[in-house]
Image (cartoon, rainbow, N blue to C red; front, side, top):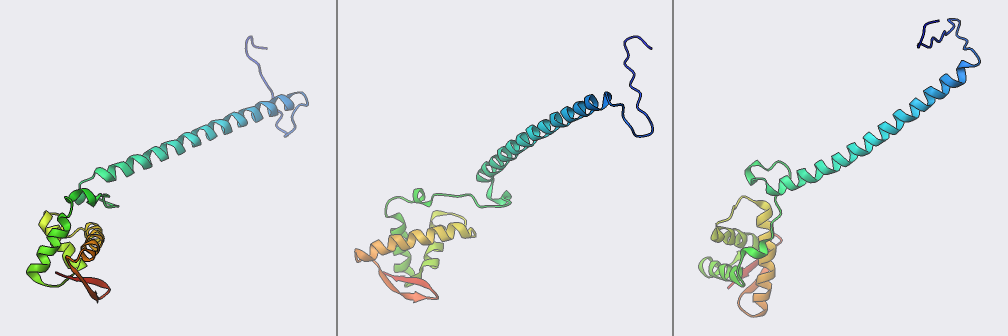
Amino acid sequence: MHQGVLWISIPTDGTMPPMGEPNLVRTLETKRKEIERTIRAYEKQIEICRRDLYHINATLVLFEHPDKRTQFPVYMNTLRLFKPREMTTICREALAKEGPLDTRELAIRVIRAKGLDEGDRVLRTSIAFRIVQALNMAAKRGKVTALPKRKGVRVWAS
């Protein structure tokens, strides 16, 4: 016998000694449970990190330059782009100068007048919705006339 060292002899015929089996099995089961707990803790930490990464990526998209944007457009509140009744004034000037125009054409005129990006479809759509709201109010006041739709889009005249 060597001092300080515990030697366990395991028979090669596949049988375990009756006294050694419960301790060995218990030790292995305890180790298995410890490893499973560690894995669960790491999986929870990975999930937290994935959520953090998702939020960081979403925030980066909001601040990306439009030319470098990879996925989603920046959301922009177009309400603050215009002074009160400025959009109606721009539309009325375009209608007086060019005659009847539909909402899409007016949206392009408004975007040009403000010096914004004409190629931005999201912006054009947002401006078009605002034009419909503004010109409906102007039509109620008698400032513009809403003509029948052309290709599903409202036509306006001064």
